[in-house]
Image (tube, rainbow, N blue to C red):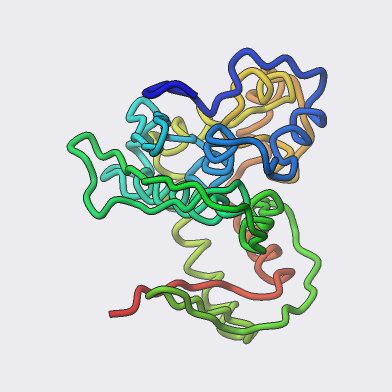
Length: 263
């Protein structure tokens, strides 16, 4: 790989025959011999708000830098870009966890550049297995109902962050009320709704063309032609209907999750 080359996460130039084939291609297991570009692919599989993929990656022989792509901002839902930069942090963590599998040590630089880019220094090493890297291509984010199965652990912590999994049904019901209240306020905000619609990929053709955003499938809805889905959206996405869906999903979930930064 030549020093200073730049790549995008959008899958430009890739011709895939179907949505399902695209999904398999994106979420395929990490290729041990994939090198720097496979590190980037691991980064692009990180959680990010609205699946905007608000990043650009620049590669050199001994480093990878993750730059914020401010053209993918969401000013209505994320006016201070907090979610955008948190998404960059998620990409950094994915690369750090994938690096040993791909034969690298990846160390984030302590300082962020003036443009907000985060640089990771790379050193070659013998490839080694890492269960957290394996989880990168298994992570899922869905707005569909859950199956209610119990989980094995109730809490955990790692490097200054505590994760608390709430399984008590009364506490989960209380959380549901707050989620419904916040969601209703957002639905009453025209700017939020316009921004949300701009990131929805209503059918498989749109999903393949953009390779980003929120697919209808991920929300538990069918893939419909975009012109028809836009007409139906105000009829199916109502305050009452969304409140019922949120309550149903929380009640079908095994737990609610809370994260806390340790002092």
